[in-house]
Length: 120
Image 1 (cartoon, rainbow, N blue to C red):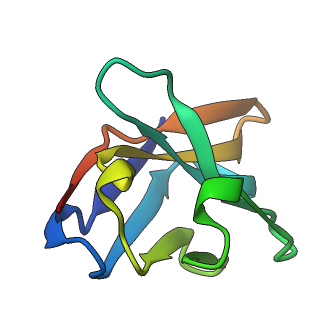
Image 2 (cartoon, rainbow, N blue to C red):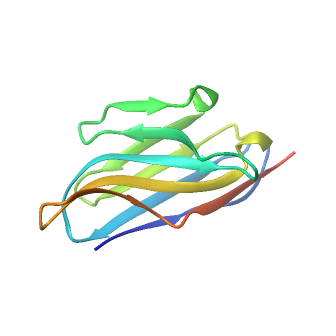
């Protein structure tokens, strides 16, 4: 079993910054891509940013230039630095990881989510 635990959400004023972190633990052989998704009320879950084990990154157009994703492969962690936050960034943010488990299964795992609220 694999667990992803997010931290760092909260309430911030527009223009402010937050840093989200996610730690993966459990029966992990390796982790391929890791990423952050978000879901705002009444909307579908969307990709915010993703990073491969080699460090290649991909960002949603709406966050380019404001958010930065990073990871520590040795610690199985991924972080999202969010700057210049806007009210439209308000959402529950979910960590996702593509994991190969110790018994050879490749599966995607999700964290439970952390709420980010940006006030205007």
